Length: 66
Image (cartoon, rainbow, N blue to C red; front, top):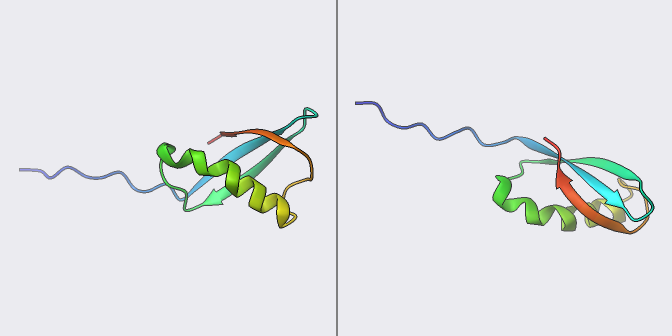
């Protein structure tokens, strides 16, 4: 009998942050969980913005790219 295999965890996920002036910035979250944890991406984007990795401005939405 064969055992079911669990899929390998996703190593990194790319997100797109949309700004209120129409700009889009992309960032990668290493060791991100599955799609059920995408709600954390906005908080991560704001942290990266404070650290200077993303441009300043009002982030209106964040979505998964790959």
